[in-house]
Image (cartoon, rainbow over all chains, first blue to last red; front, top):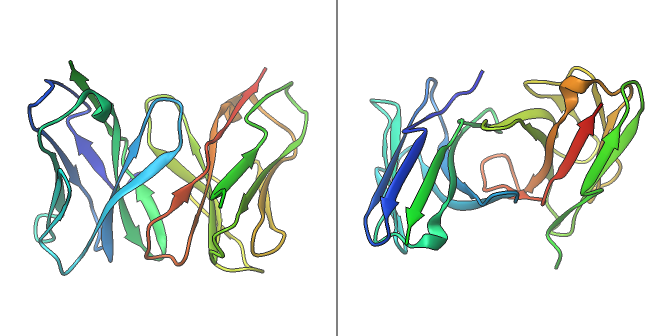
Length: 109
Length: 112
């Protein structure tokens, strides 16, 4: 069974718009990570947020974490066509990562 | 610095055949992982090795075996391939269990 579940499963936006993806999880965590996967490629780490952090930024990415609600969100601002990919959250528990099923983002030029 | 490499990139097997997927990392990472990804789904952990000399089962270990050959290399073996093992297999490594993981490019395996 998968720990994290992303919402929505698919998202289509226009270039320049913001994209928000959500992740919910079930058990306590040490940290939560977000990864991107371009079609046919391996996953690439985007950002890690620790359980004692509430918000973190990296370039056009903003991640929030609410441990009381067991949820996280990933915001991509000013999206570009190159942001088209699948995005996965992964929760760290017992030194292993458990991945969600992902959000497929399509950014239309 | 190649990161995480996997061989082969593609493989077609007949039911009952065996094969070994190879993974190597050059980042001096302690922990290595094998995942499978089925269409439209996230990654599921097959086996992992927290450190050289140790291996543990993940979520879906049945039908697979692993060997942590040394700190750099972690192989995944299918002893008797089944169509249900058709998937994309990813290897990953990390400095430690609570850090980001680095992924290889994947092996696309089809079992007919």
